[in-house]
Length: 163
Image (cartoon, rainbow, N blue to C red; front, side, top):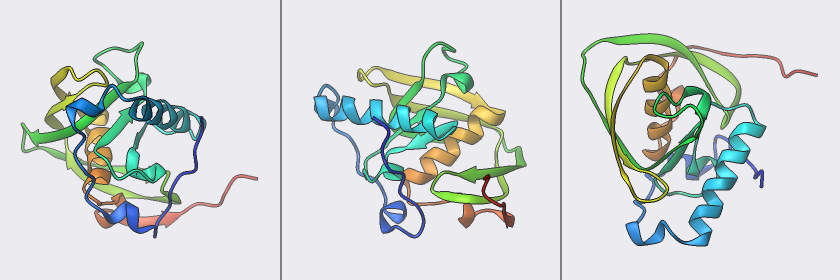
């Protein structure tokens, strides 16, 4: 089910999200939330989405299969994700966010990171991500920390909505 996206300045977007217990992964409510998050991401043409963006302050984010190099046939579900840099190199690129509609700006992010998380079944994921894939993950995990891209961006600008 497609659900409403929370937008700035809603305070949920500024909270540090709560960890998800391993025992909660098999609950119908969490599995339904994952499904809703994925459907909403696709409906709104997002490349990733975090649970706080639909009003749930928990450490869950999803990334579209289009940008999932681990398995191009499957959306990437990250539960309790964390990352660390494995290279000092950073790059600037334009970002936007479904929770900050019609606003874009340049954000500097690490080009190569190591990611640890659980998948939707509780299996441990441990992988490296680079370039745009790494950028998406950093952006989504920022949401779990209560950070929005506009906090880091330069050259912020708004675009006109499509008619």
